[in-house]
Image (cartoon, rainbow, N blue to C red):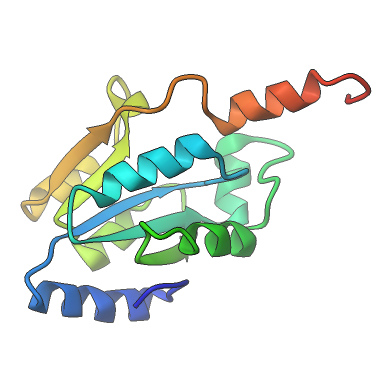
Length: 160
């Protein structure tokens, strides 16, 4: 079941997970420039249930949400890196500005997002709550973000 999955493959895998009585955790994001903050977050998300699926924003939605010059790493490569992590059971690349359609199709038991959403609107929350799922916010590792990493690289001598 592990690896990069199409939506149809993910739905079939979700059915098998449900049949075994395990809970599915789902999270999503850009995961551009994979770093230890991402790893910590994904490991904690995985600990919430029996399997972890990760939605990866495609290149167009990452550019729309993150701005010019992003993503730095193409979606297929980001998906491959995330899928290689031991804590991840499946990765789905998706288009669109939210993961709503993926959540509707997979109906995960737990939808995990970073603690930075504590004071933000989470557009997927009503979808999760409508079918009885749970939204869990996970504290992020301080000072570990792609934006901070890009800023550190730009501050290096000789880098513009």
